[in-house]
Length: 265
Image 1 (cartoon, one colour):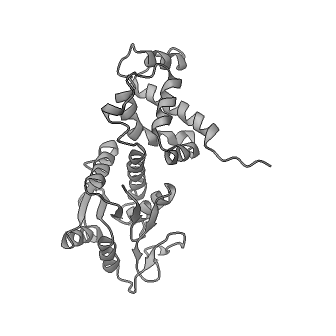
Image 2: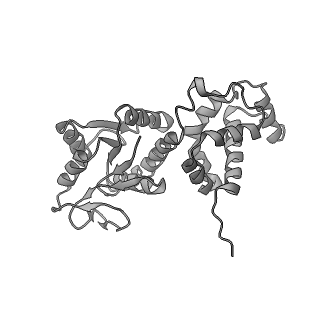
């Protein structure tokens, strides 16, 4: 299970990795060139990175590879520059390496691939690298979205989702579906989801949608759960995706009532 995310703290993919780690309460760290040097100036002290004795970018790249169990590189297209050097160094040190080219593999399938790679290779400390913002102005946002999806996948306890452990009957109402989903999600996931704004719920869909669609009986258009979803949608004809969105939204509403710390004056 992933325990820590590290990077070199540079703009783009490396900063995205650190921001996602902080957002999800995952330990973070890594090595950064002397002076906490980045292309836009000194890195903020809120990031728990250690300074190298040298200002060399390649040296920090190599040390982060050495200190991790595996390196994930995220890019749009083929590797060049520092990202290419990262891949070469990972091979030099015989470390696990996965390159996700967002031009070829994206969304839920990319998140699944990364999660499977982490699990199969028992990666506890993950080094994340990729282009800087100056090289790719869209890479930070896309890397954040992908890494969040990976972490949402880890929210799902795969043992609970095995066929042998699934409840024998499909939920019959949206309320039943919400209760089951809440019983399957760990506390950390519930607390995080409760803090989301409603427009951010779409980030949950790539990770939760497939599980709900596959295991809650939504594929049966005449099933009890789909009927109740249509009732809640004011009788509109809805598909599995819309029904799933409805269930997730109702779950979020419930979590907002139970898992948000409120200040009492």
